[in-house]
Image 1 (tube, rainbow, N blue to C red):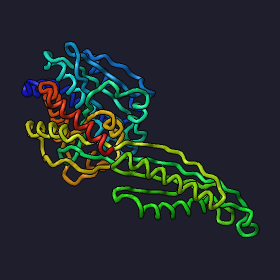
Image 2: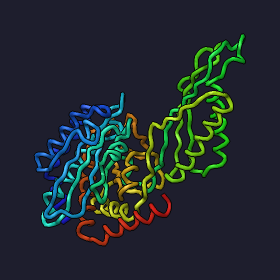
Image 3: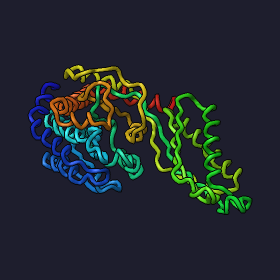
Image 4: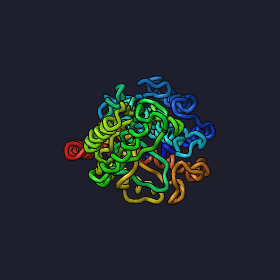
Length: 389
């Protein structure tokens, strides 16, 4: 059956790769990916998927569904298609939509004797907004039992953990005055920021080692001879444990409020972004990697124990999921780089798109044909979430 799935992917490869190259040549920024979305959804509609567009609060989001037989396990396949400002598809998002829909259609056409649902989610603006977060709040991803993605990479692997993230805009409001003639009448918003930064440094001493805290000044308040009445900073807090990060956020807010109290200013704490940590499901990673070996994917390496932050974490916090990272650029290459652009349409990129489709399709077949595997995945997810996250 796996060979049939792989042959089907090969049979549609010309159309899939032409689509990927077309998306690469026509990069669109987050929330404006109209042409990329149309190419992807047109293909799904042509293959009898029920497609909903302009959904979950985003014009360029979509949901496509196909029911095989009587339905059953709900297989979620997610894709991104936004580009980077000034860099085009230097994060290889042009590969995701074509690869994912090749997986979806291969499953539909080959596994006709199986009862299951395929739900494809198009998720815009990963690079900027992280739209999966808002999509989740607006009702997306409630109808899937497992979530799968692909991503171009220097190596073929999966991820174990990602960092939960909480971003804040911090604003202090003070009282302006002449800094030399009447400083006693002023209350410096900038002083509030500076004391906040010192507080963060002291807080840093008393958190777990994997906790990261970063800050930068956006507005320092103006000329030196005026006591600043306004100052603004951005602060990022990260941890591999969402529950622990929530407690760090609680303590951080006290530091902000304390800085305002010390300077007799007022403060605003505005959360601008919140990403959950992935719940690791090693059994699902194992299935993906076994199928990567089956299709002879290049440069297979052990799963990455720790990675940065991603809005896919918010999905994987709700349902078991994994992303197969497939090699197409040289080892050591950083994403968002010129090398990703140079390699975006070459033979290795094309092979990666098709290999990822085969890996995901083969993995779904394993889950459908061996119910004990799906049970193992779900039980591990539940256990890990209850135990640590």
